[in-house]
Amino acid sequence: MDEITILSRRLARERRARRAAEEIAESKSRELYQKGQEISQALAAETTARAETQALLHALELFSSTRDPDEILAHLQTFITEAVPCAAMTITDAPTPGATMTLEVSAALFGAAHVVIHRTKTTPPPPRGPALIGALVREAGLALDNARLFRQVEQLSIRDPLTELYNRRYLTEHGQRMVALAIRHKQPLTLQMIDLDHFKAVNDTHGHTVGDDVLRAAAATLRATLRRSDLCARFGGEELCVVLPETSIDGAKVFAERFLTTLAALAHKGKDATLFHVTASIGIAGRSSADETLETLIQRADAALYQAKSGGRNRVVAEQ
Amino acid sequence: MKGIVFTEFMEMLDARHSPQLVEEILDNVDLDSGGAYTSVGTYDPSEMMALVGEASAQTGLPVPDLLRAFGHHLFGRFVTLFPVFFEGISSSLDFLPTVHSFVHLEVKKLYPDAELPSFETDTSTPGHLRMTYRSSRNLPDLAHGLLEAAVEHFGDALVIHREPPAAGDGAVVFLVSPSD
Image (tube, rainbow over all chains, first blue to last red; front, side, top):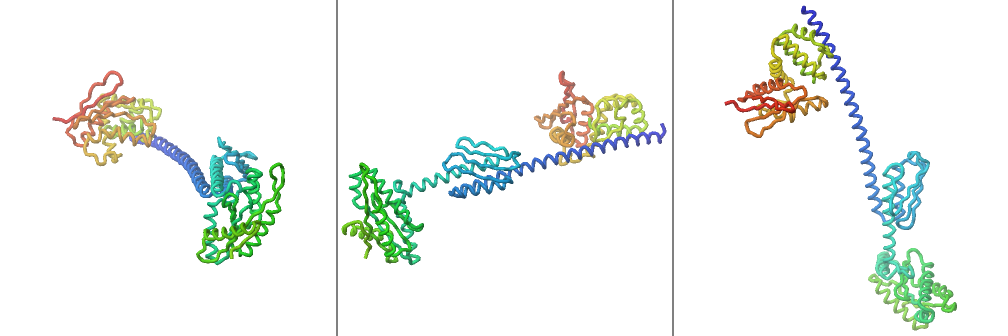
């Protein structure tokens, strides 16, 4: 074989080998590209999942930062609107803990015109659509339950269960704050002790159930005449206490007289369906010095009340 | 079998014998590839067997000797082409276990479906090495040549003793021990 032939044969083989190598390089590149795409997609999915988790954590933080059910619902609305672009959304809450909360979401995203998500006490069913929504609804529901229970407990601890007025504990705390405020702002403040007349006789004659009704009626009458800033509490068995900020003795007298009139006019149903009326005695004390306290006011109002009682009852006495 | 084995074999024949010989070998064997090998390709191992057989016939060298010589040549080429596998290693006793634990792993990263021979190493006796060679292509002479070249490359005073294949899985054991 001559050299030229040897070389041309070799050249032909080299060319063929080079083409094979090029094909291999191309296919490897394509493979790498594919892998890159797969990794990008996985990363995107991972990022979305992480974003959803972050959103959920943020939502949890907000839900647990407030005890106001309305705030919780507002947060839920915000989160869901951000997570799912919706045409319309309404959240219908259920007032009792553990009851069904209905979340109606109209979103083309879910591929259905209407998705109703119910949260029940036993199982939160996942909605069709992002799992995040279900999780948000579930957590919001729990937060609402907590908020409501907290409210209930809070109210129980500061309210008198019979009259639903504040209880003595709350009066002691809050009343003192009101006095301090009045001192700081140099505003007048009055405190009156209201005691129902002959209340023991009412209980003896008509029974304690009727007695309770009378108390409730008196409390309701009182509450109806109060301003938002006023404080009314059940002090004892048939004793009520009213604190009126930014009110002078004269103003307090007017308030007291009006109450007595309204109260006396009320007819209560007693034993054997008889009707009877009840009156009250009221003692008023007004803030007079810079070191006034709730206790000193109560003492002086009590003293005035005693005078009202011994003076004949069904009257108002203000301290001198 | 990876293309590099083919390309290096052809280069060795070309350099140590003649281009003429290469052409004559190719004329006498029937190859799907036509002898057009690229080192990054993959080819049927039977082509290698055919080439070696024909080369033996043409040169008069027995196949085992030819393969052992090729092992020597191939090792030298590995050192030139892939210096990273030899970095920081100063003896064949240190190097040889890495063939299985490092070199072949790296090859698989680039060529996941590469079929490589397995070199199980037993270094429990200090200064000694026991290598068990297994391969579906069954080329213990090639392995022998590679091992000898390795020892020579590092300048170690070691001898290689080859045990006859055990009945069963066709594994061949090489014992590398100090020469004294």
